[in-house]
Image 1 (cartoon, rainbow, N blue to C red):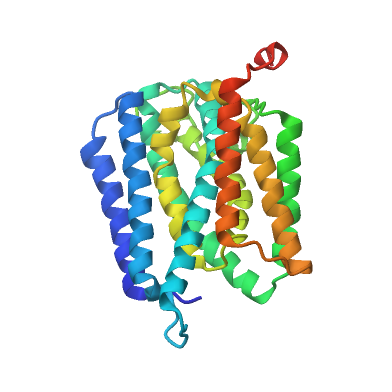
Image 2 (image 1 turned 45 degrees about the vertical axis):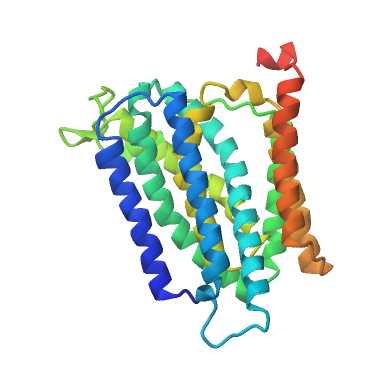
Length: 324
C-alpha cells in the first residue's frame, strides 16, 4: 500500500511533537479540564484538521503513487479534500458515542476528574498505533477482496439498528468486565488507588485497569468507525490521517461534552441512522455499483449530526428515558 515516505515521516513527526507538548508542557500537572479550556483545544484541533485539508488541496498529489498520473490535478486534489473532510467528520461524529461510553467507564470506576486527561492521553496514544495497523491491513484486504465492504456494511447496519434498540443505555459492571477479569486472573492487581500511577509495587492500579478498558472499547469502536470511513474513500492515507486528527481532538471533545451529554439524548439515534446510511451505501456500491459523490456523503454526515443536536435541544427528553 503506497504512502509517500517523506509525507508520512513529516505527519508522524507532527503527531509525536504534539503528543510530547500535550503531556510534558500543556498538561504537565494533573488538573480538572474545564469547559473553557476544552473549548479552546477543540477549536485548535478542528483548525488543525482544516489546515491539513488546505495542505491536501495544494500538495495532495504527494499521496499519489509515482507511477500514476491524472489529467486534472486540481480536480484530484479537490476530491481528496472532500474525502478527507468526509472521513474526518464521520469519524468525529461516531467518536461522540465513544465519548459517552468513556464517561460511563470513568464514573463506574470512580476515577477522579483530575486523572481523566492522563488516562485519555495514553488511550489516544494506543489508538494511534492500533489504527495504523488496522487501517492499512484493512486497506490491503479491501483492495484484494472488494466484497468485504459489503460484509462491513452489514456490520454497520446491525450496529446502527442496535443503537436504536439500546436507546443509548450503557451499564458497566466493573467487577465482571471481561478486561478486568482477564487482568486480575493473569497479572498482579491492587484494588487501592495510588494517585495518577498506573503501577504500584509491581501491581496494576485501578487507573491502569480503566486505561485497558478504554483501549478495549476503542477497539470495539474501531470495528464500526474505520470501515465506515472506507465507505467514503479507499485511500488508506486519507483514512489514517482523518482518523488521527479526529482522535487527537477526542480528548478536548470529551471534556467539552462530559457535563452536557444528557442534553444530546437524540444524538445516539442520529448516529444509528448514520451507521445504517453508510452500511447501505457500502452494500449498494459493492453489488449495485451505486456511486454517491463524496460531497453528498459529507452533507449527509453533517446534516444528521446537526439535526440530531438541534432536535435534542428542542425536544425534551421523555421522563421514562430520564429515569433509565
